[in-house]
Amino acid sequence: MMNLVRAELHRYRRSMLFWGAVLVSFFAGIWSGHVSATISYGGNFQGSFEAIYYIPLFVVLGIFTAFTIGREYSDGVIRNKVIIGNTRSEIFLSKLLVSFLVSAMFTTAFLVAYLIQTGSVMAGYLPFSIAAKAILSLYLVSGVWAALFSTVSLLISRQEVSVLVNLAFVLAVFFSSIGIGDSLMQPAEIANNVTVEMTPEEVEQYKNGEWEEFSSLFTDANGVTSYYKREQQGMIPNPNYPTGMVREAMEIVESALPYGQVLLYTDYLTACLWSDSPESIPTYDVQFLPLYALAAMALVSCAGLSLFRKKELR
Image 1: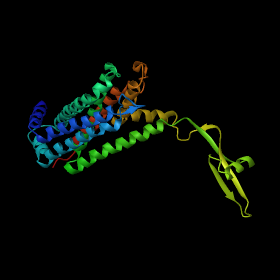
Image 2: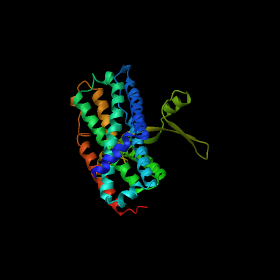
Image 3: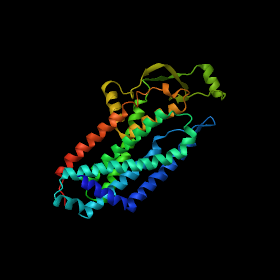
Image 4: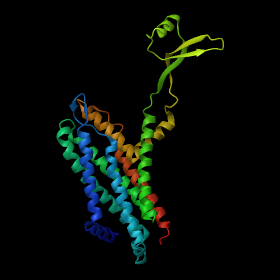
């Protein structure tokens, strides 16, 4: 298997596509870092972390993985590897290992450019220990994407289809993570707003143009007009607030999804960045994210290996 890994790395060193993807990752880091460093609140430029600015890194990885593996299918390279005696497990695991290494290189190129743009702005506000954990988390998230993209690209022989499926996975994970995050951030209770009839004094204010709150009119069959306003009467449970096992399951899924991890970590980092004592910011949302990332990598890799061993190679 290591011979397969070495041969592929040697081929990448001479590949314009590979170095082009590294360069694109670097420029994506420049753009992301520039935007992050120029965000201000109240005229104070300390920067901010936004999850969406990391999407280009994952898109580059997905496209590159699909193109390189798809080219091997079209050139008959993968089929020839089986013919000369390599097992499907060796082929899959070698591709997976190379994808991890490639994702680490793309992430490094992205981070170097990102830190060049943001270091002078954020370094004085974000402790090194917190920044180091965040960087490690990003490498692990990239590893999850690498496992997913490699699995998809090895299971789909047609290059153009695997590119589209990888991009579709990025979008699906993106919207799923945002949807789950929005649901989990719903308040447990909401205002109980009811519509009641306005008093004569309020009706007079409405007619004089002095009424600024919500109002509605209703005229019956006899031409009599009634005036109504919206009034809050306490709080009621929010029907959109997830509870019990549903909430626990959603929290697990959010922590396991690679973009969900980015959302949780960027929220945590921004809170640390704008806090006078960042070490006191609760870490319960992010402290176990590396374990979730490792579990996701293992799950995707095992599932991909099982499916690839049954795939018919043409």
